[in-house]
Image: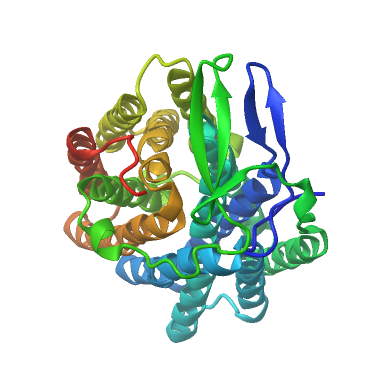
Length: 463
């Protein structure tokens, strides 16, 4: 039986097994969670490709395209913190199911018509709200069940499904648009979402209390001792008491918003998503109008940038956990090393992208940029579980809100920059038209990585 979420009175279907050198690890049902995230990115990449094709055919301006593409992130931002709250109070399974159903129904009943702006805006807002509940729910679950020395690997494994979804979207959706129509992409999304919602509803279950590991209850929390390196080191992992679930404990909002380590996470989350969302929404336009290439004719290698994200995300997780488990570096040093190296290399690749004018060079540059951004996730994206495991869902909601604001700002700003560049250079094939588009996230990567070096920590600051 697979565990998909946890409720206050019911738990994930998990068992703690002793492995290798005495490390006890939970069976998290990573596959279903990872597949859920895969679906979200198929949707986002699929929409950007389908809408771009329909909008170009209808003669929509780049600025108007940017407005529609960025609307999703307004809804996504609004539901981040409520998503963390809902996951902490009522559990992840029902929250995730509601998300799937909402965005599937939206795709089923809304036609893809670029000229019906109000309808498109409302639809993208609704899909954004629905998807915004997912990340805080998943991170709240992972923080409660994953041992500290396995957090990098577990987060990388579950979230890397997003990048496979983006790769699949880049590979399949252009062909669907060419062979059928942009509207057919909407119908395919609705069908896949409905099928997965039914599967989730029928197979998501929680075990009886007797299947959970034994532990002592201390102040409403359970403490599980994890043995590392043959039992020489013990790590205490706090887990929620099944009945209390923090119902009466207030969330320290003032401390959260006054913490420099949390702000370091927030700033890097903003930068990561600024770069990712600009690439995700505008890379198809860059290939087709900037380089005069056809996505359909590019074949399978147009999916390489996102496939590289999947690979590098998991590599980063494995490296981080190895450094921590073997005590080669402290948690703090590990997070700073991977975050800084990932963001600095990504910044160089982003700024170099408009210089190279061949399809192969563009794919290589974008692959390096996205791959090393994903590597950096083993730094900032896991750090909230290091410093605040008790409030991981809440902190993730705050951090991801900043990341979503980056989508609002970056995607819309890029549309306006391209519209101005088109006016100045008559079309978008001039490399100068794209220089500022990729320069902005490149510079942001440098400054945010420096901030993480100065202010982040791997030590718990919330007790």
